[in-house]
Amino acid sequence: MNDQQSTPHNAYFNDSDASVAYQNDLHQLLEKLTPFLSTKELRNLRDSKLRPNPQSFSEKHYLQTACELTICGHFAAAYPDTFKYEPKLNPPKDVDCSFSVDGVNYNIEVKCADYTKTEEIDSQDAFHLNFLGRHPDFLKLPEELTQFFNPESSKPLVVQPNLDNKLKDFLESAHQKFSPTPSETELNILAVCCDTPQDMQKWLHYLVGHNGLFSDAPFANPETYSRVDAVYFTNLYHRHKHYFSKGELTRHWSLQDSFGFIISNRYRLLAKKDLIESSLSLIPNYSKELLAYEMDDDFCAKGALPPIVKQGLFIQSFVAEHLVPHGIKTFDLLSSKLK
Image (cartoon, rainbow, N blue to C red; front, side, top):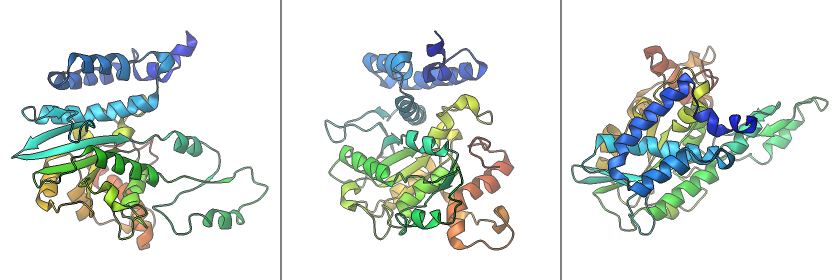
């Protein structure tokens, strides 16, 4: 039926060359995970989460599953002797996966935001206003700026909503899944799957920007997410979402080919500095490169950029100036409007 041919399910799984390659990579990933899954879990993945009835398909749920599997599959292949799928660290709750290296357990909970509302606003023919972090003038600034726009213009001024409350929910949910008894031989990591470089910049500021969750004055109570030792931001959402329209990307199911970085939680229960440092060599990321990177003032315009502008363009600049010239394609730059 024509309706079924236009469903998101058929867009992700069809007979096109891109889809065949995508499905082959998924099959290889599932082979890595199969030894750790029960027959029921594997059947649920194949028949329900990955290939549901087109009439009940949820792209949001599919992308969450794809991101979870990409991360779990990577660590199942890298650490098969110690890998665990959905271990219960605080029964009856479970995290997505864990693995051990040199007597240290690395526990990972994976979250993927629902961008439906954000994408609807982005698609509007309007002037878009974005904020990095909890800008102190968030409530009054849009109204003040409206007066500078032509009232007869057909383009309204719309504000892109922050997802910082969603990140708070992710942190608090992960906190409840990790063991309530802190240990120096256990590192608890929340993996958040993001979109474009610009989007990842926003998520970073939800943590370290004005009133950020890891800032001096967080907008939420840090005790509600103190069991989370670090947050791992990765662009897996970007790599899976409509992969068939992103010709610059391949190996969508490979965490090694993604872009990510790790931010430690200053409010974690134990210091664990050595463990966090060790995680940088175990989890694919560009954390050290980002710390060492100095943004070129010529990235957007000649002359020195104000510090606040640099903060808002830092990740975009890093990708464009540090990765692209070396042929490292972690993002599809055309789809993310970054060249």
